Image (tube, rainbow over all chains, first blue to last red; front, side):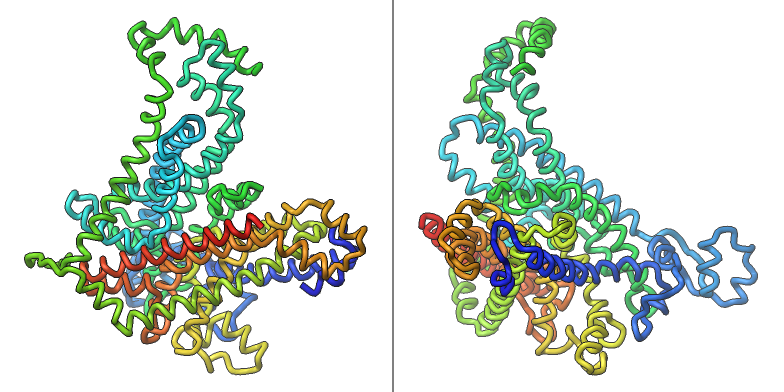
Length: 317
Length: 319
């Protein structure tokens, strides 16, 4: 705030004000990136390098974390390992150099695939239903429209654990506990509030005249919606889809309480990547890196629309 | 409009290709029926997944039901509500939650607004650095919270190493997660790291919404930059700041994922936020009826606070 006094003019800041602001902001950005930087490099360390003191910045990169992430291993005696046929792959060699043999694949890929299925499934449903509802809310007279919209938003305010209690009981009765369908339906419901609010904002920005012209030219209302409104709203629909996908991808509370094996997603799984004697930090870091990369990419793609997404469309620009 | 004109023949072809019966039915869809056709799936799903469970929670909160037992359900009336509201442990937990919410909001608003103000100086490359700063808020709080336990390790953790390096104390002399004094700060620091960008982004929108000519007029009047800040910048950005505070307040009041993985309420119950208490009662002790009553109380609290806040927000906007 002291910069306010330095600034020569608020509209066109002096060069000195720009410099100070730039240095401070870049310093914050770099500091806030340290944890992420540490996740990425820990994934490339050997387990002993990852827990050395002082923490190592310079080290010989190793793919051991990634090998451990994707495999389960058993410890064997050197004699037993010597009696095996020679290792054919680099990862076999790497594991055997630790006096272990690969017992099979780990469950990480399954969990990652679950995250993809549930993420895309719930996103698809939320966007389809949200687009339809948003169009109706944007264009037509809906009785008690404001109340309905507020009701849709308020479903998002509930603490997830409070929602999880009855959902758990309900899913237990109908057999949806620990199923993909159950998680897809639940995430769809949570995402719908965001989808309806965001998409209504995008639809409101499309001039009604476009559809009216199309209808004068002989389109029905439905045809006008499909052929005129949807293409116009495509950017908004894509952005909404990405926000829904990110929510489903990141969600933890429902996943940890309502899934255990079959439909478990990645976030509740990662803390249980365990090596000998506690968490296998390079493997955890490797799993975290692979899990976070898509989100970082999406964040960069969405940067212009982030504000709208995080405020449910309340702030547009 | 040219779009629509070009598509005219297509519409005709569609109309010709459609059997007469269907065409009549589609054409016959009035705006009213489209409205219901389009809205009902959303309402139906929200009723099934949100409202029905909520009502069920309310019903259960009046019973002694336990989800892990077959015992007959007995009607308990408002006994659990009375129990919860007079339980000193619950109130201690509420204080932990309140301290967490207030301290994170204070730090995030101060830091977020300052960052937004600095970014609004429009130095070269500010767009790029804004995007970099925004990355933490999009990540999974659970996955990131889990990794922070590694950064907080007393001997080998990077956080302890940096702090000990700066403060000149041995890195194993303190443990952010195991210490009663430090554990509440451990979750505040991670929350601030993740969500300061969120407040910053909303504040930035507030600052950018202020028209330049107001400042130009102030310049003409020879108002000092300090004066401009207090009488133009801050009041005009205030509705945005309050919006950010509202969103962060609700989110942090129900905070679960990051804190659950980082401290799981410990040591003792020093970081036992309301959601963590709720998880313990519902899914560890299986006191479903009791947990339902607590869930209802939490929901009413959030709803009430949000309503009061929104009213205050509107009053600020009107000024």
